[in-house]
Length: 137
Image 1 (tube, rainbow, N blue to C red):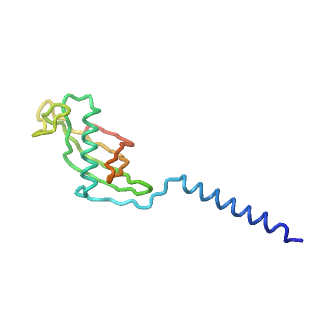
Image 2: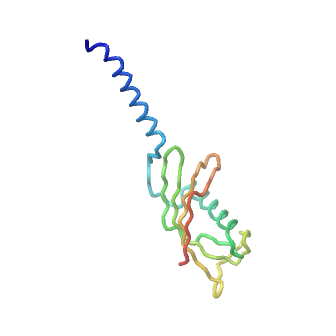
Image 3: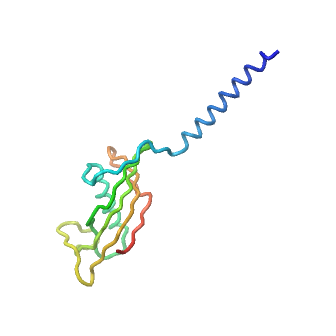
């Protein structure tokens, strides 16, 4: 008599397993989180992207440049993310200029500390800033 219930129980187990598996796929599970040096190839390209985007979106008359890299973490899931803490300083160049820019001094001196979270697929040169938070130092 217990035999007719085996097939529905087995199908129920498969259904529960499929639901659990699909739930895991939707969650963002980090496979790897590690601090990396600023000299890493993809980090350099990402910092250049972040600087260009920051200056493009800024309302400041002058462009900013990275002074110091405080920390860079690389997070890997189905894509890569960099979480960067950077110090940036206002330069003497107009907003979208980038050549031969020295740092401002005196009255126009301004330094900020920024956190950027960046979605990265570097081999396709695809970048997107997910989160940005900058404060005056």
